[in-house]
Length: 244
Image 1 (cartoon, rainbow, N blue to C red):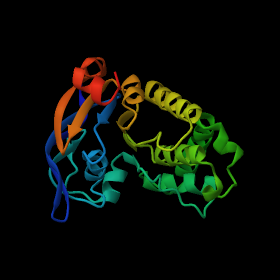
Image 2: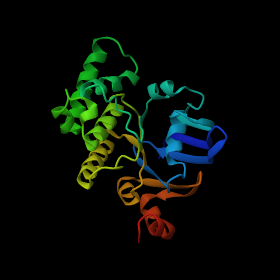
Image 3: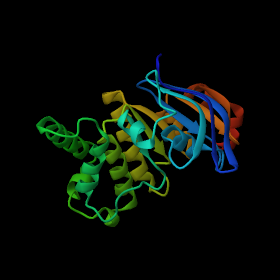
Image 4: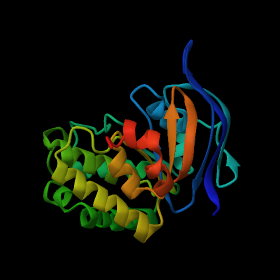
């Protein structure tokens, strides 16, 4: 299967503090890939490195064959990489609807009637995926519940029409029923739209149920990779991440 994103020899650091020690990954187009690992392993840094956001990087990144490792964060977003960070990054003083409109800022061709019509269509599509956001479209984002803010963060990223969606701990701090809803929506988006997703998730069981393939990161290096079903059966993964 063709890789949408190819990562070769990716190093990342915060100043003098090295986090990633030269990792290689391939994200298959239209598939969900999980990135597992303990706290501090470098999972969040990997997502930031792909976006060149708040971290120093070196190595080669190719999106659909085109080099992006020399591009700015904004350029990478316009090339089709959407990022939902672990802090969600919502604009708390703005309404739900205003946040979604800002998400469309990353897409190309931002002017003209066709663009406005496309944004309106995508807005309604987000409200179909996330009915709670429609109910709260005029509500200030900072007053939404944690689950609603996570939905808004995902929907805002999707408004940019990304080819690749990077998700950082979408279940963090949320009630189990809300998490089930969000992961069901992610599965539907992947299946219906063929959205390629790289998922960082501390709940390894949940991540492996959604993902088609997985990588295990330990202290900045990939130590295991393969189809999710195989990673799920690995004894080390079962003991350390699945509690079996």
